Image (tube, rainbow, N blue to C red; front, side):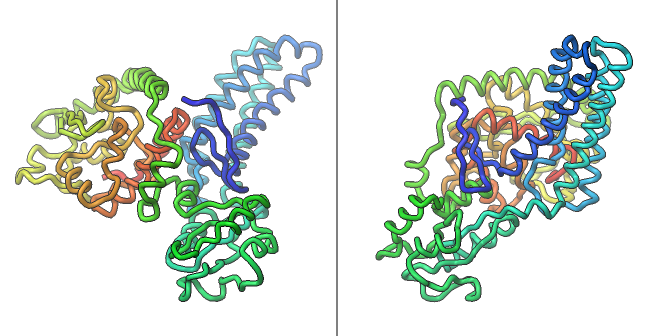
Length: 472
């Protein structure tokens, strides 16, 4: 993995290891970790003369608890940029996190080498700080105070592309403020409401400075014949206004690459798509260590699952099926059998559908909690798959999608994964349109994948498993 690079994008986004994160998300993480550490050290320092002996142990325990809380909050989805979650759902997630975090805090601090009274006091402080973090997480998820600092964005364009950008921005980040649409020189009939058009009072640069714009998104419907005022856009950038094209905008805002707004040149000459030797070696080491560890921890669950599959219906416990992997090579993926043995008796491949009658009762449960995927860890150990990557598809569907969807074959430039960016961001799809949506997330992963992004995906996978999101 490359060295740590942190790049600020406008006001609301920060790029860390090629992945775009909202600035508020980072502030939330730092607040949570800081609250726990401050609470622990406040109790330690209140002990007076004996504090010096306890500080090293308290520091290690406090950092361990803070790290565990980061994992718990990530796994329960509290750091995800979601705006349509109800208060009830947030409270349920907070309660679930609390049931895990409180015993964890008690266990971590109950072994401090200090007197019983001081140990009890520090344990109480740790548990109280954990509860405070989770209460604040629920509050922050629905607090209107987050919207006080808004990013002012001007959309350069007034056609369908600009309309799409505005709609996407409002859905993805309601704390961003669209100051309006500035029509391009060759745009005659706007697709956006005329009330949202900025009346031309000077050049684009003068307008952006007058309105105090933080960012300009270039979303012109027509870019030929002098439509792009390059000098004015350059002046905006020199004055400190960030200028992004529509493809980069979707990449950083939605964490996907919209194939309707990119071309081969953007993919070729832009950054990303690094498949270096070091990255490959690090990813392979990560796969070996964590897949072996997960297999060891999940062995009892896999054993019970194998017995349940065998008892419910006749047929093999495991299901092996040909899938397309790295560089288009075919391999056999291993899963627990979740369908009847005659699921494709007509010989024609079919995508799974909602309430698919081919799925057994046991199969429906293990698919919901993703237990059926656990045997794929064997594919990971064999080097056919990775823990994180685009999901492998069957050759029949690959041939169909390559012919219909641009850039679909790009996803085969990395190993397929047990979980992936598309899986944690988009529910199961069974149409070509769904495959296009998932491909846009897969392209983002292939372009920007790092160990940091892999860890984030694994944490979000836990949240997906807990909620049963997208299972069929």
